[in-house]
Image (spheres, helix red, strand yellow):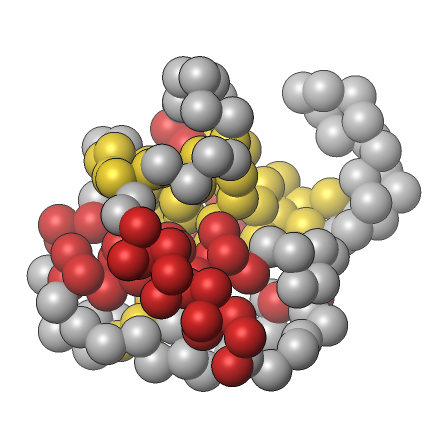
Length: 165
């Protein structure tokens, strides 16, 4: 179940301040540029679950049921309608993270809102995702894969945000 969310000005300010204070990291193919989408998504998930953001390199949020969630985020144009065949990605450079589940979000490029797409256990992702090696050609769009990754369609995400409460 895809859950839309709004982003307030104070949330955006809070995340920008977090970026200023945060360490630089090299596990992201976008380096520092993608942090805002991730931080906004973490903020939304933490507010919905009423928990703190852990800010650990292994996982982002510890749920009330002690599930270690890693939030993966990407951007989307504001007028694009989410489709179940869109893919969610976990790059090989972050596969070492010690999380139990991944939860995927898309943040609108204009920062007005976004979508919680769903969650999946790390084991289920490993068993059901398509693994692409760097340099291979992705099937759906015939583009070269720039970084090794696992991709899964939104339609295969079986857990919704409310299951983590």
